[in-house]
Image 1 (spheres, rainbow, N blue to C red):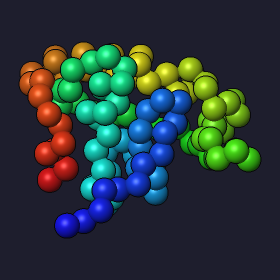
Image 2 (image 1 turned 60 degrees about the horizontal axis):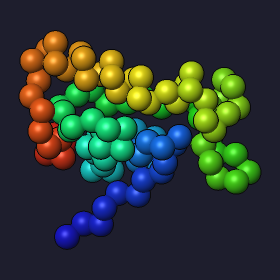
Image 3 (image 1 turned 180 degrees about the vertical axis):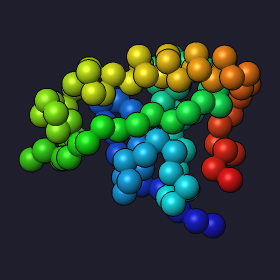
Length: 104
């Protein structure tokens, strides 16, 4: 049995620690279901969130390169990005339900 992929939290959303991806085939990581639930959404098959260029600060919290902020709503506005991704998924006819089996 393989160990779960290590994750990192960036402004309340989870991403694979190594590649900073919400869905990472290399790490067998899919944080969509957890991120949807945290932000008050039911899980849905949708495109993954994209992390802008970021790096950890002295305390280890990730900050955007553009604004040097760990809570930048412009770069890390996940709820707004999730709302857009969910609308696009619904428009494309994707169904609600668990997303953990989508890494194939």
